[in-house]
Length: 105
Length: 199
Image (tube, rainbow over all chains, first blue to last red; front, top):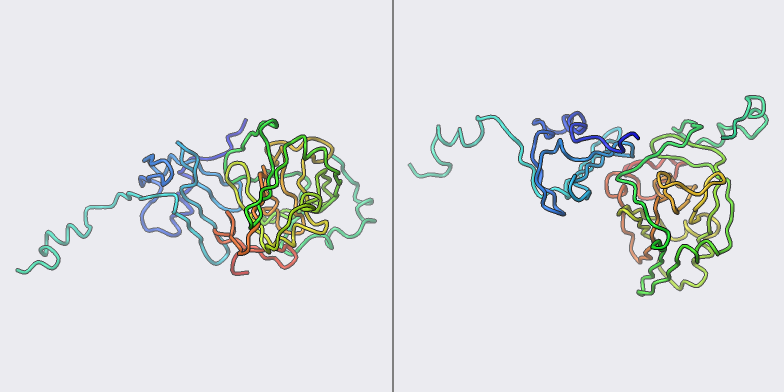
């Protein structure tokens, strides 16, 4: 029998339209059960009016995405956090080059 | 499945007249779902109506299926753009279930096994417009299509016809449901093409 859902890699394309970073490689924490794991491991139900990503542990909704012709609707209330890996040139790198923000030098 | 020849179709009321704007005709019955399919044993199944005053009306499976039923033949319209004409169901009219329910509420929040919700004005459930359906095309309603029982409200987009229906909460204020909080239209009239919240 065909699986009734996809894995979280199915979110990569639709979310790439919204975020600069690849959210499918982020780590999410489920607001219902606390399970932490890669977004790619979520269970994605796509045969629906939108994308519904559920926790592989408790099946609660972690993320919903609806794309209308002129907008995207993103619901992340089922995720406590997303840890999104980024490159080294973030604010920390700027601070080490230019000093602590607000520091009196 | 019943099939019609082109000639026979041609003598019926034009199919185009029965297709709301932006919809296409399908002969199969696509399965759409926002989550895993719940499997509810009939001996533990129940349907409830909760009023705004805190009263609960409750039906077990034998109680529901002992009620007078109707066999509506209706066209259904999914917001993902497919429509299916002349589907036949068996179910209990909500008018029967609401006979002894005292309420002045204007809104209904339908909830399902599995956690799905959808909202609509209470008026849209009454006067022969909605059923708790448990048979489809002469067969028991399968779990993939919402069995053992689903709401059937064919005059609105089909996401309002909640699969695996478990109950209805009557509310004095509108409370948007699963898709209504995620960009879909609060009412969802296919003839006015009310797909998204901004439509």
